[in-house]
Image (cartoon, rainbow, N blue to C red; front, side, top):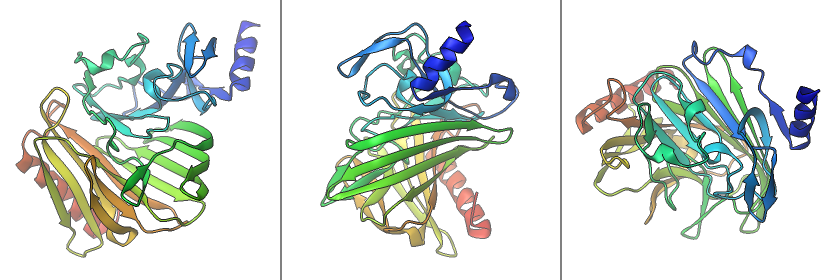
Length: 321
């Protein structure tokens, strides 16, 4: 009876539970999750009480949800492989952050279970290593109009889904009624991570072709900006490298993008931005972080550039990673 009641509560909250029997987190090299509390209550924009976070495969954001509402573990969905982890702030900020990993094991189920952001402190598995602040993080989506970055402050509803397969894990987010300037659109992001690689493929689709959809890399001090096009001029990367992690130590960040999809590059106070051409067609790019404390990690700018150039050559030959 208790199981049925719990399931009913989750369904009413817009949540579907994960069938853990279908996925072996210790065996597989990728993992995605979103974890929420369901037995507390809202007081204004804060979620008070609740006994434990429950992993779910579908979550509809509560209308009250904002940053630091405490209803979602580490503030949004997370995805990882045997080399690196990422998370997305599932609120108006919509920024992607990096979990640096010192192990090849899946670690996300451990993160944020103490109802606090202790993952900012270094542990045996690693830590949150990127300070997004007011920036875009790495490879997330905003809109850039009239020299202003517009976030996801006005959205009718947001639904996040996670999928775990034997060879990849996926986070898919649907934003319904995203309002910026005089436009109101539906928008979908799909983030896919595969084993053994540093990158995540980010595919997005807008219901209307509007100006200014952008991605980018948050600016940090002590970094060098790196840019390069492939031999066939179809692909390029935008990257930064330097002592820019929260540790602090060396971290590289990069976005690989299809040249024909990008209208311009903006160097702003907070970010390096790639502004996409208006389209309703699916658009894909690749985002990545490379942390020096990763197992067999990239430890110098020369190694990072070599790695980027190798990936660019793959795109030059195959058109995909």
